[in-house]
Image (cartoon, rainbow, N blue to C red; front, side, top):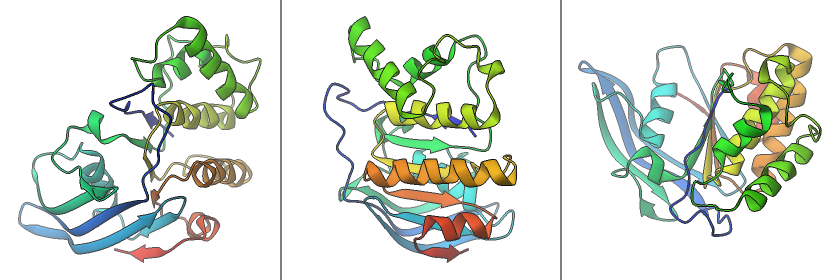
Length: 227
């Protein structure tokens, strides 16, 4: 389960989630083969929309298209809107989207607190201010005394929580989930899934999730699209 934080243009501003994430007439193809055609989708603030389908159908590629990291070998069409503004032509770091993957990808050479601090907007200045943000995030995910720990000493669930908090510290305006629970055992998956969904809803983040697990879709409680 990995976190890829994209800092906002004005990191000192209070977080302001958009009213919705919208895809308009989005199509994806590769080497002449259509993967997704004319997809229209609206994800409201605080809602979680689930994309399901067989491997290779373009689900993860769609998330990459939304966050601006899709391989240029793909053919694409359509619009991506946040707060009715088209962000499709913006570089990834300007889109203010957070994404979690299967692997957490915490930096092994940084402590837990330093991993979290990496997610903070770079223009959020002052050691005291940045430290307070990190301490608050540690407390929020139940790891208040873990700041100095090596990430290698954390359990899978603890690492997953740190990964999510690192993404949230970057102040994303929408959240993308690409099979983030698939490598967790069943009991842990249920607990971390609730943790992620509760935070997405409480912060009013439009959330788009790709999964093969019907239980993920049921717990998300939102629309399910088969592609």
